[in-house]
Image (cartoon, rainbow, N blue to C red; front, top):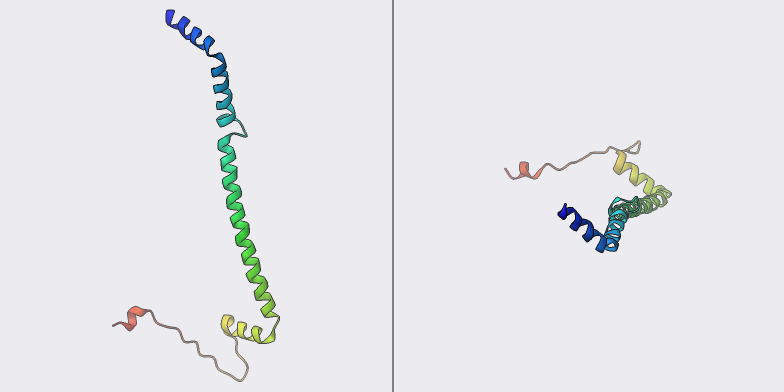
Length: 105
């Protein structure tokens, strides 16, 4: 009983400190807008910004490719390289390199 009385007395003397401590705990850890949740949201925003930049870069590359595809000579080159197309009066030979391990024997 004496121990319980001393605990109540201790809390009574430091009631403002305990109140501030519990408010900080609630705001810092348990609240919807806690510091931890805020940190996670900032991390998510950072990742989304990086993803947006990657999409912007891809958009720029595709835009440049589309501008090049508006020229007839580049369309022909593109079709030959990517889709192995050819003209009616020509033959196309595809030469691929062997892995280095075969050439070293």
